[in-house]
Amino acid sequence: MERLQKVLAEAGVASRRKCEELITAGRVQVNGETVTALGVKVDAKKDTIHVDGRAIRQQKKVYVLFHKPKGVITSASDPGGRKIVTDFLKDISERIYPVGRLDYDTEGLLLLTNDGEFANLLTHPKHHVPRTYHATVKGVPHGSLLDKLRDGIELEDGMTAPAEVDYYDINPERNETIVSITIYEGRNRQVRRMFDAIQFPVIRLRRVMFGPLALTGVGRGKYRHLTDQEIKELSGQALKSHNIQKGNKHGS
Ligand code: URA
Image (cartoon, rainbow, N blue to C red; front, top):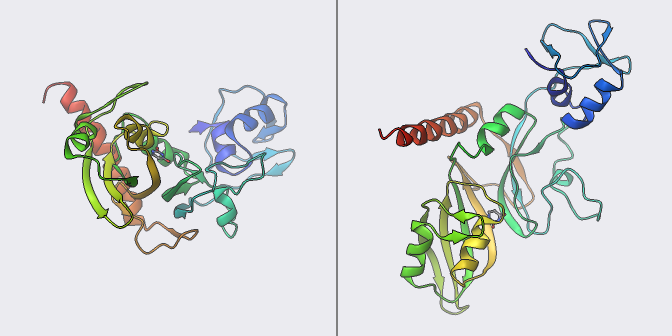
């Protein structure tokens, strides 16, 4: 059994918040009865649900790996008229939304899905799914600065957790370095802020891995569907990292 507004949102009716408004406005019927209370739970497979007299149908679950280009906003809409990620996914009829976000100027691997539970599992702060980025900076940061990023660095919202950090490529002609950094948290603009803190601002940022998934083989602005195996591995990794964290807390 699931909350009515969640079932409606997952069926693509509207956002969860909007669905709550539809319920309280008396526009939703469950098995022929109008429901206006928000706590009601339904069985999406058995109960008959109508919105404004129209029956809703459960959407099939869709899981997409998208190669987000730079200059695209990770959002369902943009009043400023900028490009949004779903502009690139127009041939997917289900209402999918991004799992977490990438900055406007960040490119790379972005997952989208209509499976709310899966999205929550991957983005919940207590599930430490690794995300790997390639950050390009001007010059060559000293190894001791990379150590700081590795060990944890003070940001305005607190210390960062330990990260894996290595030189990926040094280009003396362009006087640029690409640093590979794997973080286990998803704070806002975290990678950019970490590099700002060592005085090497990021000039290009690309996410190349999310958990076990890599960007390889998916061109910029293109996408592919995840395999069942990948979906299972990702959920497994999120749960495993949660359990490890819990184990550490109890000293085991
Ligand atoms: N860290 C950032 O700074 N930006 C992103 O888009 C993702 C992680």
